[in-house]
Amino acid sequence: MVELCLNSRYLLGYLVKEKLALPQPPIIWAFLFFSWKPVAEYIDQQFEQYFRDESGLNRKNIQDNRVHCCLYFISPFGHGLRPLDVEFMKALHQRVNIVPILAKADTLTPPEVDCKKRKIREEIEHFGIKIYQFPDCDSDEDEDFKLQDQALKESIPFAVIGSNTVVEARGRRVRGRLYPWGIVEVENPGHCDFVKLRTMLVRTHMQDLKDVTRETHYENYRAQCIQSMTRLVVKERNRKPNLTN
Image (cartoon, rainbow, N blue to C red; front, side):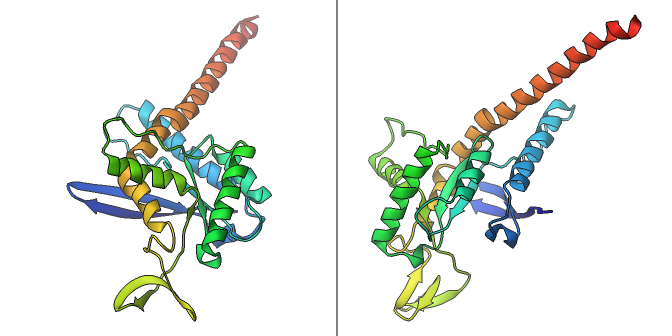
């Protein structure tokens, strides 16, 4: 049985303290036999718990553990999306905001990254996968924000590099990877899209991710629950005359 573990972190900012809950599958996700079902079940469980709390008497102190975003990591090896990727994302795209990520970008050259991104975007559209859609900027937004928003949209899927070590680069200590030919910096926009992804998640689009969850994904789940409850009530009422005969 595959279970998800939950890690919680607090994001501190000016007059803001935001709790981030990060559900993570175990390392078994790396194998091809990993199923999307535990992830879908976890998302549904959080919807179910919120629906129960919302329907209860104490609705003022509801803890919102709904999943607002799914970062789906795509392998840099191969020619695009694998059948598992297509199946996984199509199973989740009606439940959660999917943000596709091109993993291990340091294994590709910049032209290869651009080519891989185009291929993935084409296949996402071809297979009808509904990923998170960036909202259009308001007409009164300043030009810098509009340019930043356009850069984020064009970065899909975000190409990222992971590292848990700090290395020396040009007299600075940075998080990155050390290779014989040089250093790859995680937070260098010229090396990968990590900074853009972080900006999108915690600065510019966090609230919109929550809004889409509340107004679309959760409302769809809630409507299905109410329909199921209504059918059960109607079925029970139809049974009662038969029991008295």
